Length: 467
Image 1 (cartoon, rainbow, N blue to C red):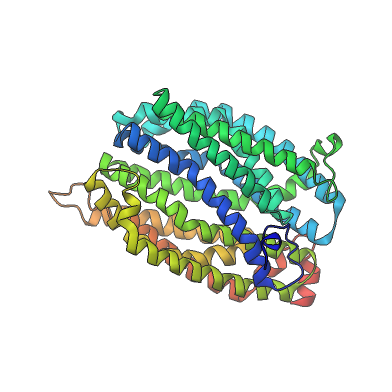
Image 2: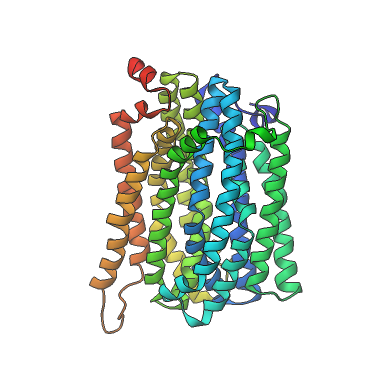
């Protein structure tokens, strides 16, 4: 496979499944890593130039921001599924309507979130027992990001469309440009203008708006695949409802996960600034470690969607098997690297030795869980691409709400001592590991049952005949 083939627009309905999946995943993985650099650079800059409390402030704000962004996660996923299926079936009219309606839906959602989110920031932070020492920094960081929410929303939505069309390269190129811009602005605003936490938030907003505009220009140039005229921006009820029906379960899944993170963040806050800062570092490294799993999951969604649209059931199952094994192998390598070089990774964020040791030890608890998440993300991606977005949602609800949150608080309660009145802080990461492993086992069992195949929109009768 040469470089030109690797970075070309990928039609996943032909050729060897594993080659198509890898060709699509690699540029998307690089793009996801670049996107993760947004928050990571923010953390490094504030940790190095402002201090550990500023680092804790950025980390405490992240679960709340993720919770506020779940609607756009749903819209992006729904658009990606429908675009991949209409692209696979070569349905130009519905493809154009879906893209146009999604653009309009994103605009309305951005405005709504901007107004509601800005009003709720400080009350939510207070409700979560955010330490007074970092409360103002958290609030200003979130406020600026919400004022620029349209850039984040449209970038994610446009990327979902491009992925559905089999184009992972464009998002990579544009995001790489925006990441470099973000790094430059981070250092300039914080080290040069001494803007603190507000500076990294403003840099992120500007960079993500730039990436969204570049994606829009790319889509305007793809007129050979679909139409992007003003008439298609008029909301089409059927297409919007289908996008929401397919996407909202993914958005709800992310909402539940983010809400659980917010609830656990309250527990984390009770352990003090050092544990909060350690959690920030771990989550930043975790973001990179999880990127291959998310990338393979998204690739499997596009692969499954295109082949369902082309009515190739056997090809869906073959690709699911091959893609999952590649994802598991990749995660196994990453797990080994984390265990070998954990302390060096943590040292990038802070020079405080106690914080480095704490972060490295806790990261070792999570390491093996990334292999389990490779299974979950890959097979969940297959289900979503086929139109079954509800099953992954219910699995996530169970492992997060029923398992992770009660387990975290339960361990904390059971380990309380006079020396540790809040319990052992390891409960935060032990509970997460348990939820990951259980989720992988349930996802594998559900996939083997095969009922997810009949959920493809407008494909149910065909699937029943073939299955």
